[in-house]
Image (cartoon, rainbow, N blue to C red):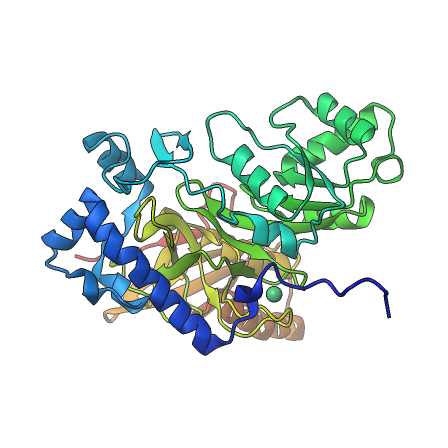
Length: 424
Ligand SMILES: [Zn+2]
């Protein structure tokens, strides 16, 4: 037994609260936001009044369906209409800081007491012993400073290296003995390449052993490279500049836990209605706070919930990564299929080329999947059975017809999803 007091596995007690408690926690937090939102925000009052909704009617996650989903484009429009914050702000509160993001969108910022991003860093093992290179821009946008806050909340020392050159970053890592990195995965790889160019062996000469990535998808092949070749333990976080941190990976690295400061819904982007467990839909976020009353922000990202308990002990639902953007996905029998899911299927079979074709037969959707193969006879039969299973597992839609085609039939110009349905 170590002499040191056992450190908690969780950032705070909220992360492993019992499900019944979690349920009432969401309800109470929502009610606590709705009432002042209606009283203090001119926009929220208008949204409610126009729909004839009383603040008391919004008391559960399900009730949020009564409110409209607000996309980034919509937010830009509303802020132009009622500058600078679209009327979403609490008119009686002094704002700590204001960030901007392209659009422009102006974001009155949450209190510096907010544990923004800290849960993600904590789950990734960032602690007070760490010296972290924060390679996110500190200029105007929320990134640099909010990640900085999160790192400080877990006690780490921060090097605010921001958008400095890769050479500069290498120098900082070397001179200051940085132990961790936060930024995009591609920028870390650029730093590693620069270090190698400068004659260093990144793994042996430096101390960087963990990285927390955000703002860019982490390709599995790149993750493997970081972990195996460079000995860097990698984690992902997910958020949006309008609402802050949304979810983060734990040690299990299997899905992203939803932060305790947000309510996440997975909705049908066409109707804004919540979808069932396991269904792919748009990630819609409400950040529980009393400064910026942006209910139901539509991220435009596609994901689905994992509702099974995570072995790490956290009780929040997890998001199963980001599968793409709303515009790219096609609905088949009410379920979305996104190009990235097809790529995932393809990678399970050695990157074989495939295309999903959607037709309408007898007033029903009909899904044909065309797959290039050279296999014949029993080998082909085996592939067929296995392929159908994997497809169902990843895309959650059953294939109506699996069509094997000759190698070279599909070109890179062919869209991965070919929607031939006519609605006339
Ligand atoms: Zn977990």
